[in-house]
Image (tube, rainbow, N blue to C red):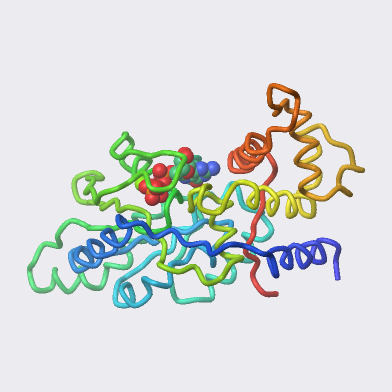
Length: 304
Ligand SMILES: Nc1nc2c(ncn2[C@@H]2O[C@H](COP(=O)(O)OP(=O)(O)OP(=O)(O)O)[C@@H](O)[C@H]2O)c(=O)[nH]1
Ligand SMILES: [Mg+2]
């Protein structure tokens, strides 16, 4: 087994057996959003289901499977520039084998965004050709974007419409209501609030969703999140971690909680008396990771 695979296997074990609390975040607005989504579905041609490229499986909302079964659907894996390139290549091959059309995109850097509309139109080709045969002019293309919170749905819409058509923000739960946005003269896209599912059974998936920003930090707590994250970074992103915080290789032998204290000292996350300010240091590590400063990392790995 190669070292890389060994490391990945070790990190796969990380969340197992952890004494994690139940990770559930299903506020009232999500239930409402799910009902509203169901109502709109019959009006839309294609559903763009956005997931996070770092967790292509953990970010899938199985609660929607039944709802979306009959719809034409494109899987958009966003934030590809934050995911490990080698793992993404494997995921691309995996999803290519499946029936569902998929694209790995990056809304911030506009990667692959130009392929979304042609692919959506391609899915409608047969239906629209039947319309034309009957002398009916095809209506405008109606798309709906759905997915977990904070994954970049509204950012994508702003990129496609080339304006600030809808609110975006770094925390989950920014979009609270549905919002139709016109993209040119014959395409409309419905922005929807991010939705999770009532009970996140898989704790590992829950941690991954929280680390990547889909669940509010306060639900899991920054202490557990930074502990889990540092544990993975110490195995999989050593170089970037050491470089970013000016650490030494010996520091990698510390426990994640002790490494956090080292980082806190280096970065001056201290209380007025000089004691470590743990919450500040934990938030710093999470923020740096989410901004891509600690290297590209994928949490979900395809079976090989
Ligand atoms: N690195 C990176 N960040 C992104 C990308 N797309 C969006 N973001 C960032 O992710 C955060 C969330 O973006 P939004 O567009 O508000 O996400 P959303 O899915 O609409 O979130 P909700 O409305 O809360 O469901 C923002 O800080 C964006 O700048 C991407 O492709 N790469
Ligand atoms: Mg939004």
